[in-house]
Length: 184
Image (cartoon, rainbow, N blue to C red; front, side):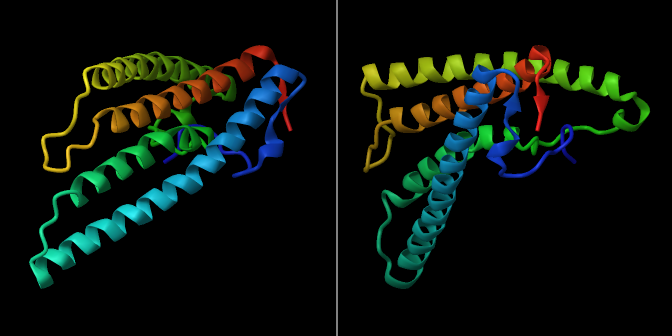
């Protein structure tokens, strides 16, 4: 089930009109999200290849794998968090639709707006905490506890950047109805 109505998928031309700043922000974020989704897909495929190689290497050739699991986890964390804004832009996150049929269109728009505000507050807090984790990991030189020991700042920065983009996407979805702009 989807949270709200879905407009044209992958259509940058569906940007808000009437407010140049909002329209420019929507187009820029849509372009950024489309690029990130392609990179996230590549990261997912790379994680699959790495994990498959790890399993086959261990099972068939008894080759130790000291980096594969962490590399795959880092790729999956990046793909998950970095693509969250794209999913939100498509209103593709899971939502409870029990009340949609019972409410008027105006009440549903208000409900969607309130859910977006609550989501922005939560995601904003999550992004802030992610940035503090990333800063601590970077400034203290934190690394994982494996033989490979990659810097923990990598997944934390990916998580923080993805949550920041998600906050921007939600903020845009809050501003569009408030600015009274029509969608093409």
